[in-house]
Length: 583
Ligand code: PEP
Ligand code: MG
Image (cartoon, rainbow, N blue to C red):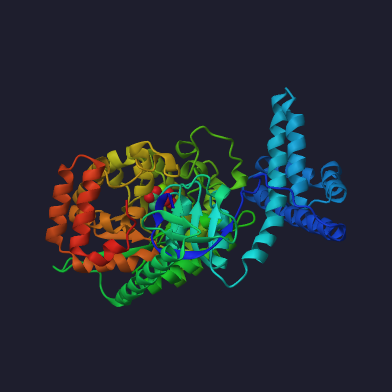
C-alpha cells in the first residue's frame, strides 16, 4: 500500500496507464527492419505537425505581442528544419533500428555531452532550445501513441510524473477512473482539474512510476490518499464496495439540484461553480449551481495551439456564458505564470515563479494583448450577466490602472459601435496577503471581491501549493487563515461589498461551517462539490455555524482545528463528511 496526498475524493479500481514525462529516458525500443520506413514516416509527420504548430504560433505572437517575442520561435523553427538534426535522427532510426523517440533521446544525450564542454554562456543556452524542439516532436509522437493505447473502452487510472495544463484535454477525452501523480499538492492546477472533473486523485507519490507499469491493477481511495498496487482479491472487493457506496451517495445527493441552498433556520446561500470551459459550465447546470463564480480563462490559452484571437476568445467566452446557469458568469482575466506557462511570454527561469512575473503582472506588461482579452470579455458580456475579475492584485495602484484600461477599452468599443456589457461590475481576487491586509482601501474602489484561498494560503504560509513536501503547511485548517478570512469578511460587511470565496476551500465540507459562521454567503467551487455543499447547507443552522466559527477562533494548532471541524461536520451532516478528503 502507498500513501500520498489526498487531492480529489472518490474511489477507483482499474488498470494503470503510465504516462512518462516526455524527456524521461526509457528503455530503447528496437524495431525490425520492415518497420523502419514506417517509423521514418512517423518521424516526418511529427516534424511536420510541430512545424505547422510553430508557424501558427509565430504568426499570432507577431500579431499580438510583437516581433521580438517571436524570435525564440523562429529560432526553434530553424532548428526543426536543420538537416544535421533531422538527418542524425533518421540515420539513428535506420542504423540502430530504434524508434524515433529513442533516436531523439540519443540525440539529446549526444548534444548534452558536447554542450557541457562549451564555455560560452550564450551558446550553452542553445541546448535549452534543442530540448524544447525535441520535446515538441516527442509530444507529437507520443500523443498519437497515447491516444491509440488509451482509446479502449476500459477506464484507466492515469499514473504520471505530473499533469500539465495542456493535458487537460486528454483527461476529458478518455475514460479516466483515477489519477496518481508523483508531483503536485492539494491546490495545484492538476488537483483542481481532477476535482473539477470529479476524478479521484492522489498526488505526491514519488517513485510510483518505478514500481507500477501499464496494465497493473490499482485500487485507489482519493479521500484517504491510499493506493494498493496489485491488490489481493479481498482488498479489491472492499474497494469495489466502497466505490459503489461512494457513487450511490453522490448520485443521491445530486437529486437536490433544484432545491434552494438554504439553511435549516432560513439563511440563503449562493452556491456557484468554478469552470474552465463549456463542459464545466454544463456540469455546473447539472449540479445545481446558480451561476459561475470563477471562469478561469487561462485554459483557453493553455490548450490553444498558439495565441487565441479576439474573435476566438469571444466565441469561447460566449459559449461558456450561454451554457452557464442563469447565464451568470464571473470572468477572470488571464492568470498565467507560476505553475501555468504558455511559451509565448518567453518565461525566463525564475527562482520563485509564484512570487515573480505572473498573472496581472504579465498581462499589464502587454497592454495590446491584454486589451484584446478585455474586448473579447466585454463583447461576450452582451450575451449574459457578467462580472470582470482581476487576479493577483497586490496594490491599489494596480486597481486604478486596470480601471483606466477597462474604461479605455469600453470607449473604443463604443466608438466602433460594437455591443458590449454595460455596466460591468469590476472585482479583484484577494489572494496576495498585502491586498488582504489592506482590503479596506481596495474595497472603496472595486464593486466586489473574490477570495482566492489557494494562493492566499500558499502566500500566508510561505508554502508552495504544488510542492508535496510542504503540503502539510499549505492547508486551510489553520488559525492564521481563519483569522485573515475573518478580517476580510468583516471589512466587506462594513463596506457592504459582495464577497465570494472561490478557492478549493469553498468545496471542502469541513471548511463550510466556520466560513458560513463567519458570515460568508457566496461559495464558488468545482461543480462536482455543489451537491455536497448544498446538502451541508440544508442540514446546518446559522446558529451552530456561528458557534463553530467562534470556537475555531480560539483553537491554536492545525491539528485541533482539523479534529474539531471533522467532528462537527460529521455531527451536522454525516453524508457530506463521507464525501470529503480525509487528513
Ligand atoms: C485561488 O488562488 O484560490 C484561486 C481560486 O485561483 P487559482 O487556483 O486559479 O490560482
Ligand atoms: Mg489564485
